[in-house]
Length: 322
Figure (spheres, one colour):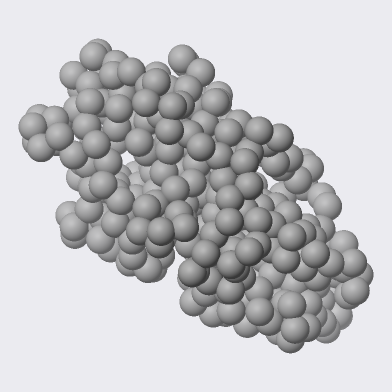
């Protein structure tokens, strides 16, 4: 887990996102934890978006790995993947409002190419991802969802990235927040149902047990709402995952709105691609495809293109979270 904010790749090109949300918003982890996330910037605001077309096209099918894919997926030539597409740089919509982009989207495409199939993204609420997977509505999930022991009781995970919770504050840090202990007595915004919310509630207990003022936790369904509250001072901080928080702080308002509190990510751990527990062969095929991508360097190139290489894993583990 990186100990310092991620550095945006110098090769990124600036793209103007138009006709979309008024603010850049962030993701979450654990679902994130990955929940919630970021929406594209306002018209005229810069957003760092790499052109990874050639990189994805260069990924070659791994015949040995593709041979492990269960027959029904190989014959269909497609895997259906559910995400919560509002979490830049993890996964979000391009300027057309229709095309999924992000480093997770690129990794999913590359994994599909290794297996010789295409990956179709489906956008849905974060809270619906696990149940949709369990019901067989989709084959995979990939939405900056933290691989935890609790979630492993529901679904299996193929780990693909390492992240953690970080604190985002207004530019200049007027409330002088330096870490979790300094959140006591403050208003903190989180996305409903995420590991961020769980941590905020745990930290509230830590504050009161230490005789300090309690947190006021505001849980919403949208990071956009949370960022509006932070900008206007209704909350003092937002809890987000590291990649999204860094991306937002560097792009929202041309970098003038927010900043990330320095320090080690909180409750660091892996993001995982979710697979139905009754579908172990598919999980193992995804794991092998990702490991092949790691081995040939394509994985690292994708993360580097999006400026999140510090979250790279050396091994694609199955249920490696704690």
